Length: 296
View (cartoon, rainbow, N blue to C red):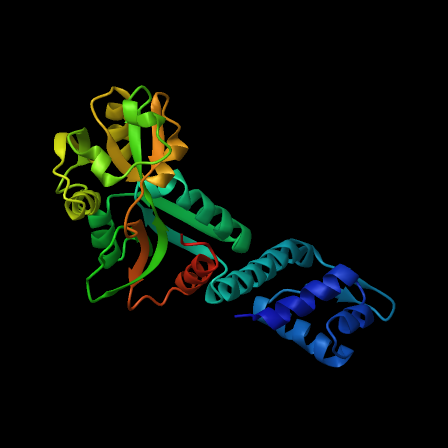
């Protein structure tokens, strides 16, 4: 079987139709160049070039073989280039899971940074709740996950990606909507559209913990999973809700958002998680890009 060196020698002579120019192009002398082509012709058992002291011409077999040789060389160059990019974490496919709420503001910024820094990387994005993301991550079906804390599995590593404040979402005509900001005490006695304790465990615990610290007994009227569904009920004036600040990006008509004054910060956090044994160079690139982005 022929090798790439023989193909490169043949292609150079066939394209230049001159041994001297082909040798100079390949940075070699003419005798080894001639020997490489002779070996190639013996392997193929055909004559590829007609040589005289004054000219070089391709035979019919040579004309047929040239585009195939060029294609093989291009494929080899492409494979080499792509392999080096993948090894450097600059090419390949990055399978990234994310929560619906992270797509309101943070995920678009992250995707923009990834596309700018890694234009040859293909992103495969999957929206899932945090629990499902952890399962997919452990099974190796995604490379990294944007999930709500805590991430406690010993086979996973997690770093904080975002910490954003909670804000109060109110119907536009609500009496509290005229204030510049609210406190947890302002919610006492107010109907609350809350989070489901199982499907939205993180936000359920965060909101109820915050109200408990303020000695506020919530009057829960509905429990939902998705923030956009919660805002739809706020718009219908069924109650008030506490949501991450990024929810303002949804621009729900008939819903106003007010900052929440707290004695101590209780932000809604988002973390990036990946497998401890991951050897994908893209993960290191993703973590480095994330480290340069603001987290609060």
